[in-house]
Image: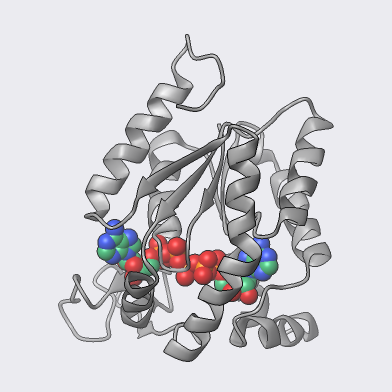
Length: 225
Ligand code: AP5
């Protein structure tokens, strides 16, 4: 199964991507997480890349395309993957299609999780992550037992450096300008499914799961619903 997740920053791509990954046993590949690991490594490349993320801008296509191509060539991706945060430009989408068609494969569907910009800013400003295990929380609806401490592993919670209102607003603008055209790209290819992301996390997942199960069912012809 090969799925691409689209949606505004804060739409729930990471949240739903993790759940699909657990249920269907395929890797959840988040380019945002990969980029944050590079930044955390303290390398020269990390320093360079950080200038883009802290400004809410996209990393140049050629770098991200190469990074994803290497990742999807790894053994654990042979049965499929869920791409979260890629493609984010039409150029990235074209390069993904090209590398898949060279292997006579294609994505099963692109899932757009739709939320409003107001909801995106609310969620982003209240998001916290565990510095040890990466567990994602949201102060709007999930308080931890001890403030600022991860319930799962006891690690310290932190706020992403791009999760302040100023940078988040820039990310939303970049999404509309550079990533929203990718939604149209997949719509034209007959691969797009859009769902309402402004519902309870479990409710959103129930719909994603039902769609995925239907698309993967033996008699299914490959077209999206
Ligand atoms: P990235 O990390 O991909 O950020 P993003 O796309 O802005 O997405 P987010 O991680 O903010 O949100 P999400 O949709 O995953 O939401 P989540 O599930 O966490 O990218 C960061 C940066 O890296 C980019 O700005 C860019 O610089 C660079 N980059 C990455 N990929 C790139 C690429 N391909 N090309 C170039 N540059 C690239 O949920 C958000 C919060 O809401 C959480 O707290 C969660 O608990 C909560 N939540 C989730 N679902 C619900 C719900 N249904 N109801 C209530 N709360 C919910």
